[in-house]
Image 1 (cartoon, one colour):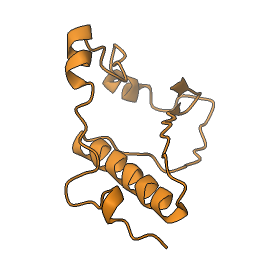
Image 2 (tube, rainbow, N blue to C red):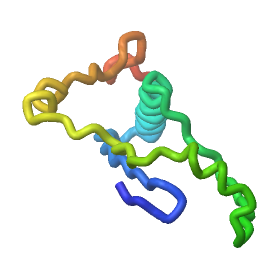
Image 3 (cartoon, rainbow, N blue to C red):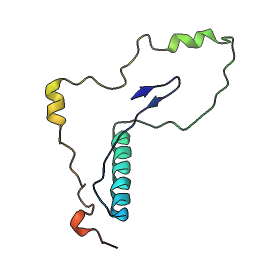
Length: 106
């Protein structure tokens, strides 16, 4: 994860062990959709690129009183036992998705 001036950059590497291009695309699409589903289920919304012009003066200082006084942690700091419990908990492939044997070879 990288914290930039106006965004977070999160890179997720997934390696798909397949020499079949169609199978690679199917697994890649499934992974991307599952990541988006997980984010959505936790209330995370991805931002769209936006440009905003900000004036140099603070015309409305009363708006600053609504800002939080402490910074929230972007990702929870799980205890070691919680991390161990989560390891391997993602069922793959998802139920109802084609597995390796049922993929049509072209």
